[in-house]
Image (cartoon, rainbow, N blue to C red; front, side, top):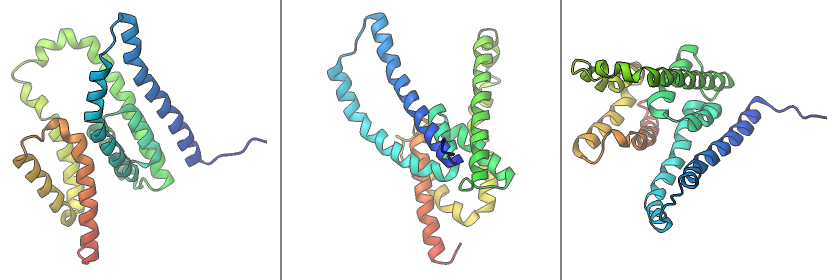
Length: 221
């Protein structure tokens, strides 16, 4: 007799299966290219590079699991880790969808809403990329126009600015500390730039959770 599994059990089962499949595919791609073109990397140099950089990514990966799961739910997290662009696309889409539906990621309804939002954003992104690839050549002169350059530079700030207004207005006391932290870090630490956003998001979340705990203990929240 076939055992009926719950929604969450199904999410974890299929999430692990597809996560492993994607990991294998990502690792096989460079190997396949190496065999096709008959060019293999210097494994000594490769190993030295991996040992130098891997610990940072391991730490970030562990932090991101504890950071994103409470915000996206299990299903949303599995799908986000497979499709990528979490902080600048999947996270805003999922949070906005759950906010509009009035649910939380810890609820089963929130799990479903978050997963659907991330899936739809992934499909839309893929379609836009396909259209972009087809139209990139004829549109290049327009997109590189000096008039449009400032607008493209402000796309991400506009996206996060709109989300920030909503959440800061709802949690004004809690938002002050992380805003000050990020401003200080990005202004006075020149090494931080756009490429470090993926690392700084988990750092900001953990800092905010710690501040929230302190404020709650003091009766401020």
